[in-house]
Image (cartoon, rainbow, N blue to C red; front, side, top):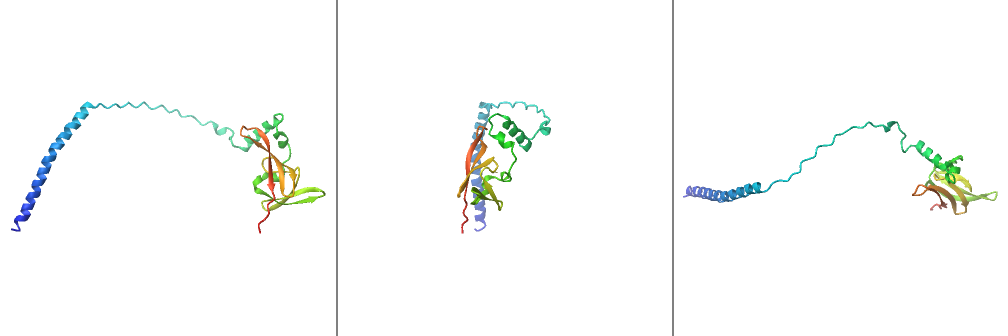
Length: 181
């Protein structure tokens, strides 16, 4: 009896598989017919690709020109600006630069003040060096000229470009920096 059981099980599995395949074959045939019908009815609408544009290589001719961000070009532009009448920059470009004009204003700090022969002086620290400045001296990279020195700050007038490219005056100040203990 044991030998008949595996044989019956095998027979049953084979019969179920056969019925399943027969049942699916009708669905497959119906699906195939629907697909063929859709292929006949629907016409694809594909736009043809346009021909590629012809590439014409151009020689690079700006190699020998002036670099747009060079100091030479900036100097020429500043000199042209200075030649214009009523230019704030004209007097600034014709004078000799002072040592503290090489440093940006935010790298300087006022650390003290003193009076010599009745004139006020400010003590400025730049790159761990101490400088004495007085009214009329220049400092910073925006043509800053010291207009007033008090015990707590140094006021100066700077010449800068506004958004429209015009040169204008603005006031700035360096405040006394007390060292924290």
